[in-house]
Amino acid sequence: MTPAAGAPTIREAADALAAGATTSVALTGRVFDRIAAVESRVNAYLTLTQDAALAQAAAADARRAAGTSLGPLDGVPLALKDNLCTRGVATTCASRMLEGFVPPYSATVVERLAAAGAVFTGKTNLDEFAMGSSTENSAFGPTRNPWDLSRVPGGSSGGSAAAVAAGEALGALGSDTGGSIRQPAALCGLTGLKPTYGRVSRYGLVAFASSLDQVGPLARTAEDAALLLEAIEGYDSRDSTSVRRDWEKPLAALTGDLKGKVIGVAEEWYGPGLDPEVRRAVESVRPVLEKLGCTFRTVRLPLQDYGLPVYYLIAPAEASSNLARYDGVKYGRRVEGAHLIEMMKKTRSAGFGPEVKRRIILGTYVLSAGYYDAYYLKALKARTRLRQDFEAALSACDALLSPATPTPAFRIGEKADDPLQMYLSDIYTVSINLAGIPALVFPCGMSGGGLPIGAQLIGRAWEDAALLRLAHRYQAETDWHRKAAPCA
Image 1: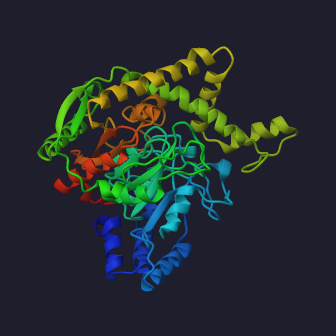
Image 2 (image 1 turned 45 degrees about the vertical axis):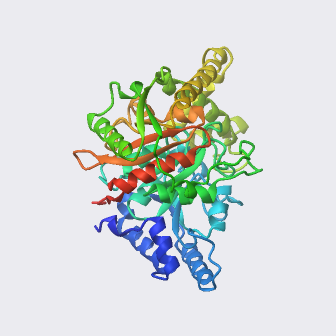
Image 3 (image 1 turned 60 degrees about the horizontal axis):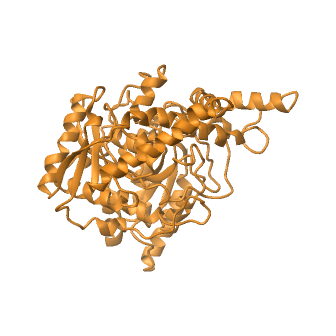
């Protein structure tokens, strides 16, 4: 099987298109050739849209020939996570509940990429309704990590990450509720950004936990992530949580230097459970950033240990509420019953997988009478304290550096029967969603077994561009982001 080393970055593809060195039709054709070669093994996609993609590519070539190109993404093949509504294309959330559902509208981020001229290769696999850390919970089979097909690509945006890592797309969109962009980026050797909550519209993103969900890019480089973020960010009146404000533009920010930047490191991130290889790789980032002018200081995040339990109270509670709409009445799967209650029971029993049912039960329990104050209300108070922890640390630092995952990619099935061990995969990411601040993961090393390792940068609210600058300058000094998955 051919390695993905020949797959260009988004910037390289954009430059080649602008120079006339290739066409979008040729570029898109090569991507679909790659899909034909590896997809049966990787299972990154749930739906492929080859005919529509080639038509979009031809339109991009016609615009460029007429001198009316729409910009750097015009004609670039990108993939979309299958919880982003896409008009006329099946959007299943990897669930039998929405099998065959075709939305009559597109998510704002999809509209904005289309307006930028992007070519959509298809919809990618995920943990059902984005609930999982491994993409093993898909109703349509697990996605496999292109670096080692016996291992997970991370989740829930594992299909998007695997597609980019395997050369089956040049970039992709994912969603991140507790690490679902950043964890797959780490395990697949990519750069992935969870933007500040409210920076990117959630309109058309099928809801998991509405106060935590955020759409963001998965790409090979920080520059590619900046290109994608600049296309999708901005106020949207259709999303009540979208924020109208000015912020530093991602692409312009890449040119700034790092002299005098202060990076914080918290001792709480380096306790038991962190793989020694991951620790060494993350610590190796420090001398590179110091060479570029950064200084490091130790910070305290005393409530970090509460992040995981707080997340697994708030997120399931919101999931229980959001998934109540799937009742067999309005849209989606219906299993007939003798009466309405029986129909709902049968529909939800057949439509939802085990992990989704687990989270609905947990969320319904913590919201129920007699338990609301003891669990859910207390979790909301702890969430505020966690956010204040980050604000205090970031008041003295420009960014924080942490591991992204406790281990490299684990084997498929290794944690399937132990939900707690699976949830611990997100121990370094969930608190950031609770705080609503941006975080970026980028490749920083390899394990002895040849698996990618990622580091995480965490920033102040709305300073997403500062994280992209740090990673971009780091990537100019290193080549971890250029290593190609063998897909063997």
